[in-house]
Image 1: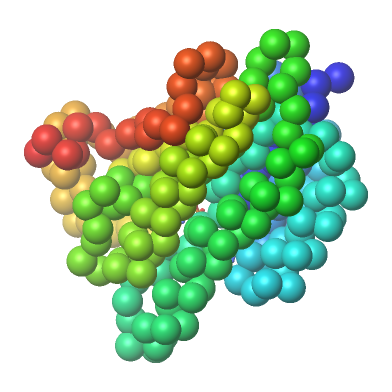
Image 2: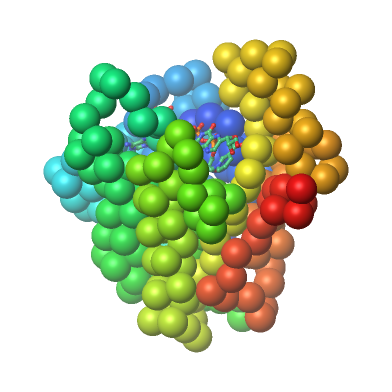
Length: 236
Ligand SMILES: NC(=O)C1=CN([C@@H]2O[C@H](COP(=O)(O)OP(=O)(O)OC[C@H]3O[C@@H](n4cnc5c(N)ncnc54)[C@H](OP(=O)(O)O)[C@@H]3O)[C@@H](O)[C@H]2O)C=CC1
Ligand SMILES: Nc1nc2c(c(=O)[nH]1)N=C([C@H](O)[C@@H](O)CO)CN2
């Protein structure tokens, strides 16, 4: 039996698609979720281990680390997918927003990577993997999600540091999507405008992230890199 891959925020959208694909290919999976949904039970019934975790507080991060260590002494990989896409808004003080963004996108991945270093095992000649789900805005910044973009840039910087420190037994890479999957409440106007933001005029859906994850898991010579999933938006 292969060692499990941990996916944070695996109860919906990209994280759920990644978890479902890995399970369908007989790869054991552990997911964390913040709010219980039917998908959590569906993943559990499909054989996943499901752990409740909220990375917005230090206590939540510490609790998650202890529960993951107890559940899986050894891991094939970690996919840091959990994320909150929150714009600057009048209801949230800037200090609170920056704190919240940094906790889930940088502090939690940082602490989990350190705490789970010895658990990460290469197996059958395949190196272990850490994958950080960052964002196109890691390199560009954002006008309406300033704190969010800064926290994703911090997450990408963790890719560079951990790639250096964890070589040669663990590969560490970023996947930087631009708009890959719409949200249910995205208006038709937003959707049409978004399609024109990249060269390919596409919003491909969650399977594009699944393909990117599977590439990195099988790669032998890729670490400290960013896999951009943006339809050429940077050239538009
Ligand atoms: N979708 C896209 O087009 C893009 C996605 N990305 C990145 O790809 C990744 C996946 O995107 P997507 O599937 O849309 O992500 P979602 O917005 O669906 O969030 C994924 C999960 O993160 C969980 N989460 C949020 N905050 C916390 C927290 N404080 N502690 C624990 N869990 C938390 C949520 O749990 P709950 O549902 O319980 O609240 C949610 O299920 C993310 O890192 C995202 O930033 C980047 C650019 C574009
Ligand atoms: N946690 C999330 N992060 C992001 C999302 C999302 O739905 N959840 N969506 C985006 C947008 O698609 C953005 O890339 C559009 O330009 C960014 N991050």
